[in-house]
Image (cartoon, rainbow, N blue to C red; front, side, top):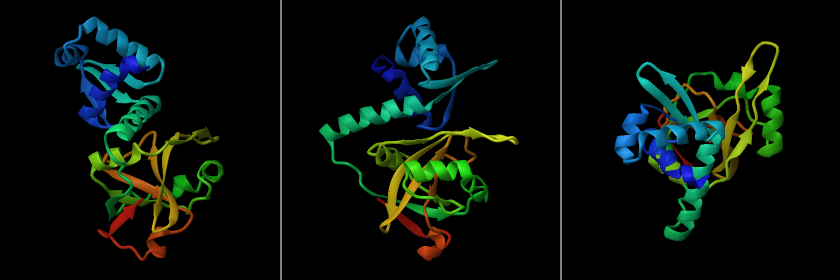
Length: 212
């Protein structure tokens, strides 16, 4: 899998861990100085083993990292980070108003069962939304093992998978939750916890919140 690191890094540098890159094999070929046929082959292989998601369109390609691609980058970062620099053990974000959809998704029984099993708590039905520097966020979560929460289906609809990262907020267990599909910008994160964090910590809009 490490044969694909250069392309994974290329995508992440352009659009981050969760963004979508609009490009073409020709553009990538020119920027990386790699033959276009090699780029095409590697992208197909990376899609097949679920390192990336790729869709063709009239203008070229739209590419984003899949869960396995993010995990490979994070694993590589952790290995290098242990050699070259100290870990980033805390990060501060600014409390922002969300879209109001968190309570509906978090309260789903199937998600709650998975939270209890893999995170160690049932989540308060709602999320805390923080605006955070995305470069600092990348360094912060790269020091943590991602926790995969599998999606599920009901009679009405499909609920996508989540990637979680365990954190603490003033000694309260919590988790950053990254949905497979999200309306938030990459610099906005959602947090779940076993309590209502706004009430418990007496938080209001634009307050600074430290995660560790």
